[in-house]
Length: 78
Image (cartoon, rainbow, N blue to C red; front, side):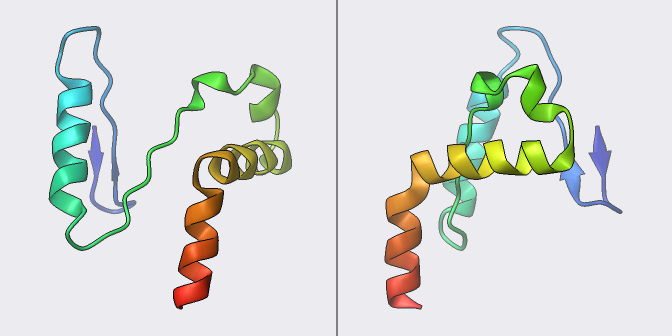
């Protein structure tokens, strides 16, 4: 699916359809101009999606766990 209006796309296929390959190629392409991050939402529980506040809290925890050092470096050089 693709939404030019909302500026997002989704990849929804079964195993062995090239989803990871596509995302890795997109990451390689965008790294020249953007700081590309990758987060795995598999470790969130269904409770983490119960409302916006709970989701944002879980999202920030995952982001910080994976990119906390990057944030410190970005703040230092901004």
